[in-house]
Length: 236
Image (cartoon, rainbow, N blue to C red; front, side):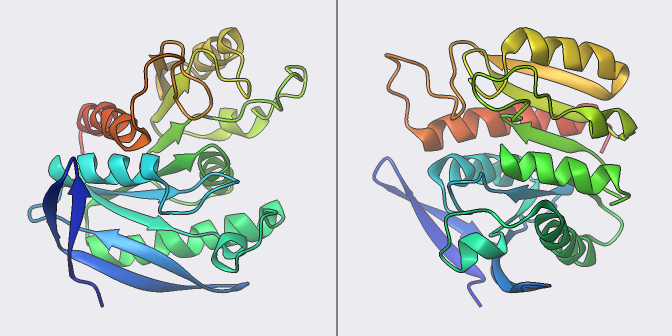
């Protein structure tokens, strides 16, 4: 269902063809996915939401829209807890299981083309954990990696990243309380040739910059543009 759609942006209807609503089986029941595959698509990106949102957040909408226009497909999906209307994320293993299911759904649709994975905050971290455990993605995109809890920079969530051997893009706000910027730079340096850092100056965990007033969807488009260049540089 839903193979054609239109979005509203600045009062203009934007046609989106090649759009399909999916039902993805997970160990916690079915979840909804939104597959967008433009004509002559070059690769796909699986995108998971953050802990407090779902796949329809304006940031992810703008992100997917920009990638679509750059001829990259996307699969956004809900984790089971969000699908079921719960606020508290499921335990890590269940989230990883759901991510693997979404990845396989994308992989089954792209043929020989590459599949990148990632997401906003929690979604990106879970993607990286799945890749560290063997999920065969071609690269990772982090929209605000949650390196540590706010105010607790000693509690780093980075050990598994050193086991990953695919290109990684860190999109990070310099004022993100979940990732002190000097620690993010240190992490990227330690990851060496596998990691690239793109800083959003003054951006918080949602990439909002104080006094700027940019809509989240437009911010998502800007991050999508950086991501498109990253995928191209990864020789997809």
